[in-house]
Amino acid sequence: MNRRKFITKSLLATAGLSLGFYSWQIEPFWLEFVHLDLPIKNLPSKLHNKVLMQISDLHVGNRFDYNFLIDSFKKAKAYKPDIVVYTGDFVCWENNPEQFEQLKIVMKEAVLGTLGTAAILGNHDYGAEWKEEYIADEVSKILTDSKIQVLRDEKTEVSGLNIFGFEELWGTNFHPENLTKTINPDEANLVLCHNPDVCDLDVWNCYQGWILSGHTHGGQAVPPFLPPLILPVKNRKYTSGIIDLEAGRMLYINRALGHSYQVRFNCRPEITLFKLKSI
View 1: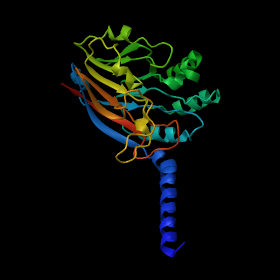
View 2 (view 1 turned 135 degrees about the vertical axis):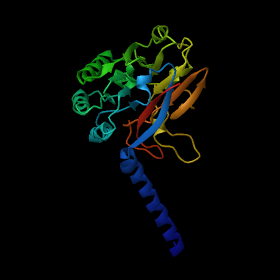
View 3 (view 1 turned 60 degrees about the vertical axis):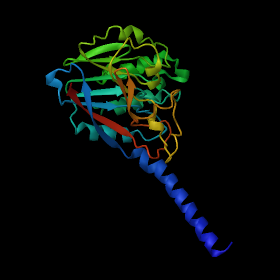
View 4 (view 1 turned 135 degrees about the horizontal axis):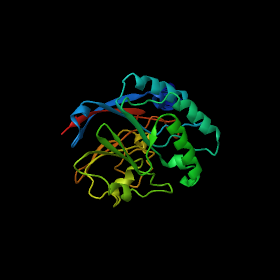
């Protein structure tokens, strides 16, 4: 091997190692606070310009250091959100009851809204093959003990804003059509739905408004000019950010705070801060 080839291969190897280290140890813990407006029909004037914070996919467990979640919560509290919603996957189930204790530790520092806090469950909150209801029940209890209202095909009202929380698509209790029948289009409404694939199902009963989702983690690794590498949805357009579903429905997919695998590239962990707007 001549000198030029040796230098070229050395540089490529160094670049590869640097990229691997960045994707493993830097970006997975490089939190981004995303700021967006959220226009809602019939929003009470008292909620205009109030802040709604979305946190999604904590994935508490042993796959990464959950102290990152606690540190992120402390940073998020500085924004003093009026309403906080959590959109599922609180644990990354590993058939280990230790995760319940880990979740309790993390949720001691949970971000709470000054007006209200609500949550829905995700597929990982249903344990192995998404069918272990006792895990969903225990996660729900921990959240309730942390002053978070868990919505399981239920509605809560926060200062005139109706928040509808769907059960998990892959879980055992998914029947959102019973909930959407109760939505009054003359009121201010918002839907929480962990898996954005639900947007393609016939369960909406002509709902018009915003849907906040998670589940995809934004793909976690997004090479330039290529689709995301990890995308657990049928509809591949459901990656992250704002998506116009047409027919009056708008979707926002949060890139997740945690991760099921400690790797991120071109897809930083996210907490979203929505400024509510009357329209």
